[in-house]
Image (cartoon, rainbow over all chains, first blue to last red; front, side, top):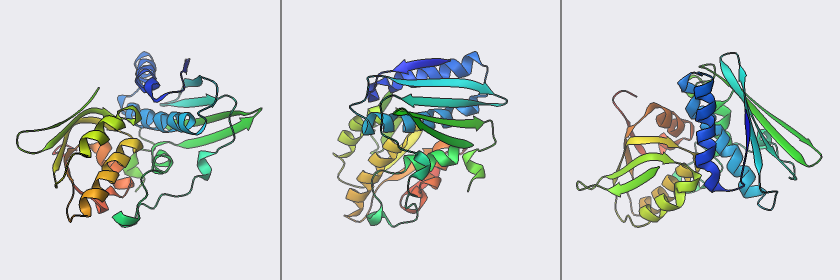
Length: 141
Length: 99
């Protein structure tokens, strides 16, 4: 199941509705909803913010895995950026030294089982997998 | 749908989904808060990193005066996100009884 979304934060309601539509149709475990929504929002809004002049659509696709899902986001005509290369967030720093921002990619790594990036012909494709329970954030302390 | 309001008892109540599209609304409200407050998250279903940024920015401003926000009735998903963000070191956080 795939759908294009306009390159805007205003698309988020539609993105979340799309995720719920898929999970309902697939009779997927409800526990997938939060981590999948969180990871998609972080990746989608990164594409909105850092490729603001890109084409006015971003493709999101969801496909089933055994006990989980694989989600891909495609940004057309973009510069390369691999979320796996993002620097670690200073989560142990005192309040005064905490930057506002930069937590999203750190948190994604707690919520997904794998995060994969491909870049070809100026097209960025970032994919993640998430299975029921296998990477519950409570198991990654 | 996201809502933020000041309750009669002085608590700040959040409800719905605090995502990147709603951060402007949340930040505008919290910028008007001038003293420490309890933030009741009993009806908050979802927060993204953009929402965390709103809370962090507010905490930095309030803590400059000595005390800041205390989050209560935090659900299990949001509580885990706070912990993995290290927010449990810079905020007072009380999980919901069933979280």
